[in-house]
Structure formats: structure tokens, C-alpha cells
Amino acid sequence: MPAIATREPGGAPAAELIRELLLKGEPGRWDGVSEALLMVAARRAHVTETIRPALARGDWIICDRFADSTTAYQGHGAGVPLKTLADLHKLIADDLTPDLTLLLDLPVEDGLARAHARHGGETRFEQKDVHFHKRVRRGFLTIVKEEPNRCVVIDASRSIDDVHRAVLSVIKDRLGVTL
Image 1 (cartoon, helix red, strand yellow):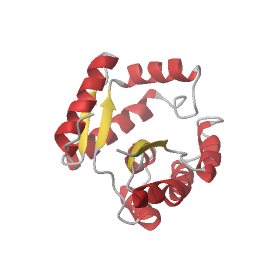
Image 2 (cartoon, one colour):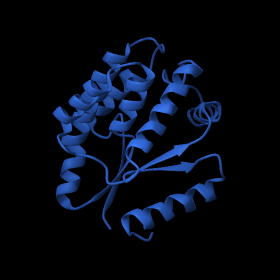
Image 3 (cartoon, rainbow, N blue to C red):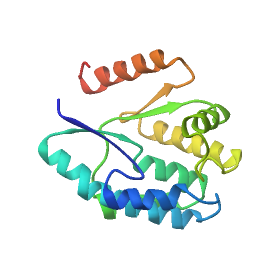
Image 4 (cartoon, rainbow, N blue to C red):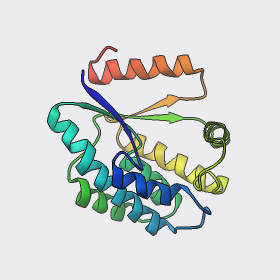
């Protein structure tokens, strides 16, 4: 099946420029509202330049992060009202919602250690305190509880092969696709 892999923030030329602003610098560089507005601006470019054209072609989209990340990070983590974030998403993406969202979950400390090893350093998000990251994780888990038909938690503390098998199983069960 035709598919594209993309990411947020980023996934389109203008969105990649905004990504640089969001990921670099001091952790307190932007407050929660400023971060949310930058994320939404990047998402708008991503949706209009990448996602909607791909959907129009009949492509499947595999996106590393989307609106749930803004809800978790800027909403639950930084305190931006969730209704405000939902309204902003509606404004820039209308009814666009993933068919399936996988939350690769593990304890905060383990996730931060993996991110540090993967990046060879830290983005400004990883530099935020552990309490922020715990609020973010709780936010993601809240989203899963509120939308169990769309969201599935995968235990990411297991081996890469086990996580891979779990992901494939969920895709088969939820979307009827065998990979």
C-alpha cells in the first residue's frame, strides 16, 4: 500500500523551520501558549502541504506525533487549556483525526535516557524537569482512556522486537492490515 512517514513538529518545509525554533534553545524559551501556537502553525503547514495531499492520493500516513502531543505537552504539561488546544486544532485541521494512535509508553526516566542516547544530547523539551514529563505522560494516558477506540498503549520497556510485534498486532487487529 502507498504510505508516507512524516513527523511533528515538521513534515513540511515551513514546519521544519518552526521545528528548529521549538527544539533548540533553553527549556524556558517559550511559555506553553507560545509553544502551542508554534506547534499549531507547524501542524497547519504539515496538514496542508503534506497530509491532505497524501490522503487525496490515497496514501496511508504514518506520523510520529500529531495533535495528541500538543494536548499532552502544552496542555497537560504546560497548562494551556485543553479546550483552547482543541479549538486551535479544529481551526487548522478541521476534522482530521488519526484512525489509530499508538502510545509507546515507558517510565519517564527511561524515556528521557533513551531520548538523550538517541539524540546524542537533549532538545529543549528533554531539558524540562521530570515533573513536567510526568504530567505529559499522565496526559497521554488520559487521552488513551478518553479515546480507547482510537488509542492503544504499547509497553515500550520491552525489547525492540517485542515492541515491533505488538505494533504489528495492533495494526492487524485495529485496521485489518497484515504487514
